[in-house]
Image (cartoon, rainbow, N blue to C red; front, side, top):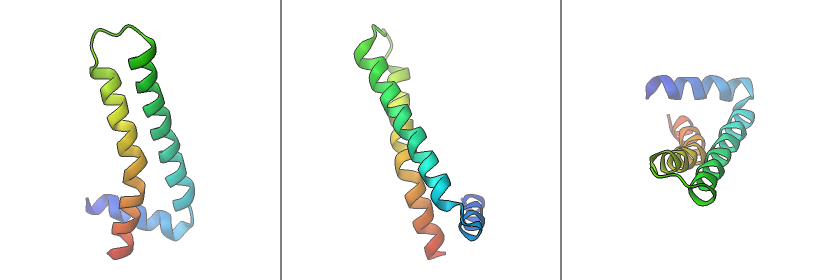
Length: 74
């Protein structure tokens, strides 16, 4: 976890934190939409892949803001 916070500090110092945050959020949104699309629009017998995509997308939507909050506290 310390390494992740260190990377966030370096990105914050270089001014790229906003771009990286929005890129991760965009990837999270795409993953959620892909998971929902697989679940609702196809006949997938196993629901592990759509569920994993949805959970991964939600994590990618939330984690950047949590990492930035931890970096500001540290």
